[in-house]
Length: 154
Image (cartoon, rainbow, N blue to C red; front, side, top):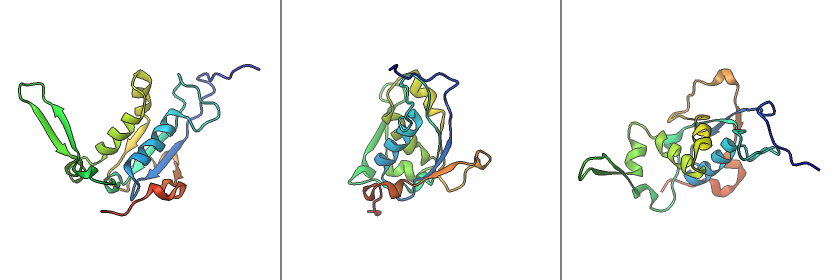
């Protein structure tokens, strides 16, 4: 019996749409990361981009448990004394709330060129509208997978 290794001709990508409203951020990110890598497929090959194209809508309505809304996110401008911070709550209420979901999914993937390529298959939108209707994406109900995937707003 030979081990199956996928080739580019074997890869079949689907489009998935995920509604993030009321879903816990970490659980959403781990499910989306697994879909991006293709680990849900029986033909998963670690060194190939086998994952689906994932669309996440309502990213601004994602839930965080505990005190994670007050958690600071740091970055440095490159100049002396240029460290800056912003809390997760400020990012979610700001102009680009989808960046919280993007960063969470990015950190769930292993680092390297393949992960950067797989991140191009992720599209995150703050609202309920997305321009990918022509691809006829299938809906993935993350809320129904496990009751722990949802939380009430604190």
